[in-house]
Image (cartoon, rainbow, N blue to C red; front, side, top):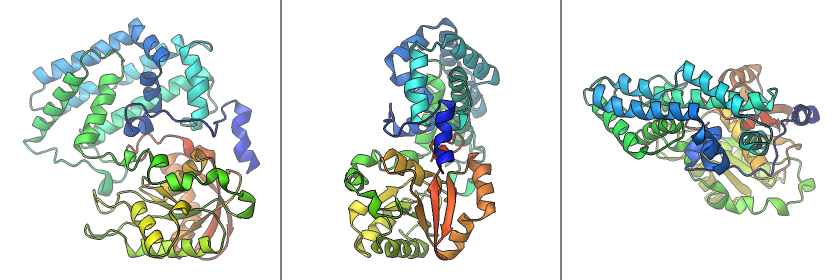
Length: 410
């Protein structure tokens, strides 16, 4: 594990556990496109980008596209959306321009050193030079904006169509009217904007909004809401008294809209509560968002926390919620993210407590392959198996990297 945790320092791209993420205008935006949020939020960077003539030309083109589309596209909704995505040529041109503008000691250099690297949000790009990291982070964010527009405005299938698809029937006669209206709102709201990425990012956010897909922001800021009692304890804990940092409970969504917590969720909570009352860890982390069935109003993590407190008598100060994960892969990833962001030990093992079938699935080679296929990294190292329901894992900080093609839980 020391090799896993120290390899970042050897490349000069080590994240910092005390780094405070910048929220910008919204959690949905900052979680999906952190570089663009920094561009918008840091005054010196914003000024540099707005004053550059080449980037200003692109900003003008995107604003012009908004004006032209509401006049010309009529019932062709792909005409509207196509004008707002970044073309391959635009992505390449901006990347080259950012590299040209970059200097170790200017605003962009400080952005990389003081934010991109310590945040860990682009940690999978750790082998790149600082200048190349800036360009690659831009390319990732541009792809992410395009992907969001493609799924939630154009109706492209997401990675998990049954739970993440567009709300609307794109073949309906009324759909081009909706796209026109949304485009016109963006046009009006973006008037006077000077940042080259502003219209396109705003467009992607607008279509997440009309689809009511703001799951990435659920319960945020969690440190001052649902996780406050637990986070307030972190610095008071004697970690030497516990074998594990936390006990992770992966969510299990119900099959019907009228049920808040599935039988699987209840049973998994009971296993975790047994381990908690045995004194193995100071925290139980319940993980699962508003996932099953499609666009359910119930959050798996919230309902599991409620069950732990009301039925199993686990104190609120011992429960951490991850209300964002939508898959078992991201149950694991988000647990690592939260323990890291909340200042917990990263060198200690954690425990996954769940039902036998899922437990053995998590410890399988097939699950490792799934993590690589879906997230391009594995956010944990397996430890020992304690029982048929409990297996150890160690955090891997690759988990901090933003997943650009999962806008509901990036």
